Length: 346
Image (cartoon, rainbow, N blue to C red):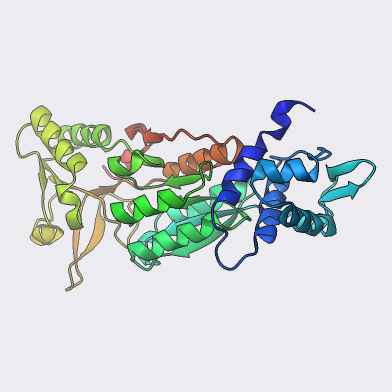
């Protein structure tokens, strides 16, 4: 047998090195991970496994634990064992095991502006088209809750990986990354540069996008671009850099930060709103109703939002790449402005 036929051994050992958690006995955890590897074709049908003593040493568990786990796999029809010929992965999987693999999607909260946006249905459709069943989690706006959800998923042998709309603090993220198995696929949908150092992420190249939006808007008689950035994002280095460079190219005051409330009485076609916050309405026209503050008043101004179905496609692309060929090196993908549907809002 070729040596690379056993490349999955390293990944299996790393999975088993983390505590199984949730009270799952180690032999059942081993059996669950092994079953996932078989169904995902990381372990090929008909492969002869090492003898039990060597196999147990290679994956870092006891001979007794291995034997109990292999017995569970045998009862499920996933392996065949005989004293004369050894242990082999079954050539044909039982029909009941040919179920879609799970891919987790973690959002910050279940709110209309997130669930009703383009990204949630796009993620669902992309995963379904690739044969994955979505396992959805909401953190209810709590950083620690989302961190705990991820740590539990690391120990779920049936979960292939996760796509995360993160609200985790840097402290919670650091704790999560300590628990993450080395090759466990984890893709963030909204990472700041700090996150990109630690995990795969998909994010829009906002600078090019804003420049293109500004050019088109000014060429049609527009006057100013208003960056309505919520929470502490206004102090984010990336957004400050966008404003600075845009001011340098288009003139001071063309791009500025404003609270949404300021625009209540500025219903002007000369103002374009660029926001990181999803309104409850669709962004498919030249104008959008944006709900502001506790008084729930509406404003009507031209607007663009950086969520896009292409973000979901790229995220699932990367997740599938990680699942099929796990790597230890991380990277992030920038989505160019050409992927934004600018003509729909200008």
